[in-house]
Every structure is written in structure tokens, then in C-alpha cells.
Image 1 (cartoon, rainbow, N blue to C red):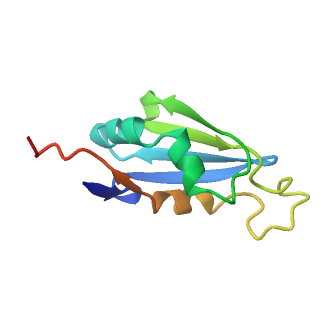
Image 2: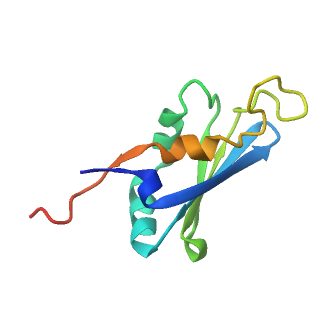
Length: 109
């Protein structure tokens, strides 16, 4: 079964120099368990193919029901030197929330 990430979570993003910081926060505990299981660093890297040129690191924040991703080598030098339209990565969370996750249908036996 497929679900849109935006149906179970919201997000925030910004810059850390040349790296983008993307936080995905689940609306509830069930959503957190889904993102923890299915939203991997590899899937995020693939989603941003051509944008993220470095590695993607994932951090779990269970007390916030959130995952934080650091996308290295993504902002063409960062906000003070980049000529990119979104040099501070503010739109990356919205872009990630458009991702569809393939999850197990708990109603199937």
C-alpha cells in the first residue's frame, strides 16, 4: 500500500552551510513508527537525486516523533555564496513530503 508522507507528517528545512537540514515530524506515534521503518537515508538520497550530491545522514528523535536528515553537498556552497534559487534549502521539506512510501498493509493477512 502507498501513502504520501505529507498525510502522516509535516516538515521543516533549512541550511547548515553547504548541507541542508530536513526534519520530518510525525503527527502521532503510529506515523512515527512508519517513518522510522520506511523513511531511510537511502530513500531520501534517491528522492533528491541530482540535488543532493553528498551523503545523507539520518537521526532519530523519538521524543519529538521526528527524523532529521542532513543532506551534504546540496546547497552549492550555502546561502551566502550560492546563486541557487533556494540556497538555504527552505523548500526541501515540502519536496520530501511529496514522497510516497510503500508500506505493508496491516489489514492484509
